[in-house]
Length: 375
Figure 1 (spheres, rainbow, N blue to C red):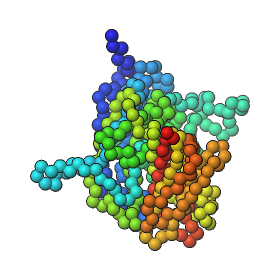
Figure 2 (tube, rainbow, N blue to C red; figure 1 turned 60 degrees about the vertical axis):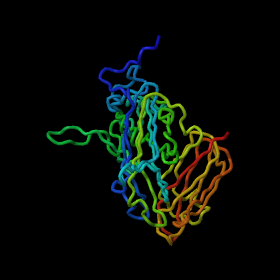
Figure 3 (cartoon, rainbow, N blue to C red; figure 1 turned 45 degrees about the vertical axis):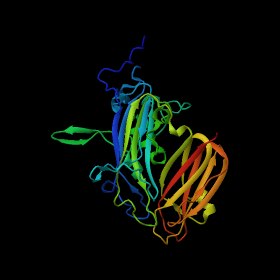
Figure 4 (cartoon, rainbow, N blue to C red; figure 1 turned 90 degrees about the vertical axis):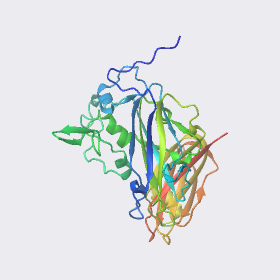
């Protein structure tokens, strides 16, 4: 006898058949770098929020209403192909060749996870009798809203509300959480993090990722896509591209998620001025990353600047409670294929650092981290 289907909440949408979509890698939809300090980027695409335990009672009704999740019992599987060009260039000729881009380009998957949020009445210091001085009744409210980076703005999806005959943004705490029960604002401004570069895996018929696993096994899972790219030798090499990357989202867990054996992710970074390469670890722009697997680390980077600019220093620091290993390199706009990679097998936290030399140019970087699992 087959088991009964999982229960879903009354009025809740169920992800019964795979949800299909495609991300446009199309020149008209890709913003060219406006300067050295700004990488090119594509549209932010919101994939949805999913409830992986729809048969259980709602733990926090206010948060659940804010998220408006799709029921996806057992997890969420993302599958994607390499980009496809389906334009017909001749009679009977449908081009489905997989492109190999010359410059640095990444289609970043952002994932956020959430179970519950602390209630405002419990957000106090355990050792303090009462609410801390200066705090408010809202757990995550801020006196000054976030100054949004383009990264955050890419995730700043708002559900519209109807005001008269015109649509208006919903009250989801834009650029700063105004109300602690806003689970969606928490997901997109605090919890959503880059997890994978999909283009680093695409090449087989379908590649797949376990979004529930990447979100940390939480009940609610949110996902976004956004393209990042760097100029090649100071030139825009994506001016005439026209490709689409197909994907599907299905309930349950995938059979062979690609990120369990090799982890690829890319990060847009803007350097700070440093005196020399050796100072990049302390004085450069520092950003912590965390590999979901243990293995050998390699870091590559592409310089968004003009040919003739000074190189940008890039550092990798593997960390535990102390520094475990360090390596650095300097990348000029006309240098490609440079990598650093401490031989130490490591799983967990690493730090990327970027800095430009005194009297140099502040060139943005697309920095890629690849971790090959220990066999």
